[in-house]
Image (cartoon, rainbow, N blue to C red; front, top):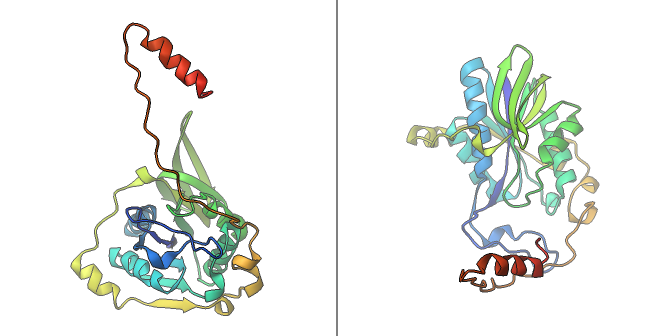
Length: 260
């Protein structure tokens, strides 16, 4: 069972995140960067699948030069190798461009049975890239999984929805995106951290991956941020004291805000 895990380096949610002033793209150099937490869960699930069914786990990442830190974190957890798409022309690529580029990279890897990804990155919060990768590959997609099972050539997932649990199945190869409740990712051991330094990382340019530069980048995107502004300061709340008519006053307040 050869599993590819899509990972992304994102700004640490505990640090201040900024957009660049010129083009409103995310300023990745001005903040601490980490492997996205949901990607750690995707890596963990891929490792568990390998432990049960054998095979290999390959990390696929797209991003600027410092994204190698996220790749090494995934390798230190136990992944076998990585393929890293790094090219200055990728800067500012939108979700559709990103998904197509990642699908190109997956296409360069032999005998992939399953692609696992987090269901939503903490920076863009688009939540559609795994589905778009599946569409680009022409593979079935099973999204928002809280469990993943493999039986023969079939992958099954359990998805938590508003109406209850849904059980879905598809033939391999397929793309699965995982939700936060799927597992608790393991911590890299000292042995794993040291071993990660020697694991192979194949670096691809756009040309290496067979991607035309006109298909990616800020200038060629289908969406663009035209302007941005800081979040306004939080306003003080209004206290309602219940002196016998608190309920009425609360409803009046909500009605004034057009919330009821």
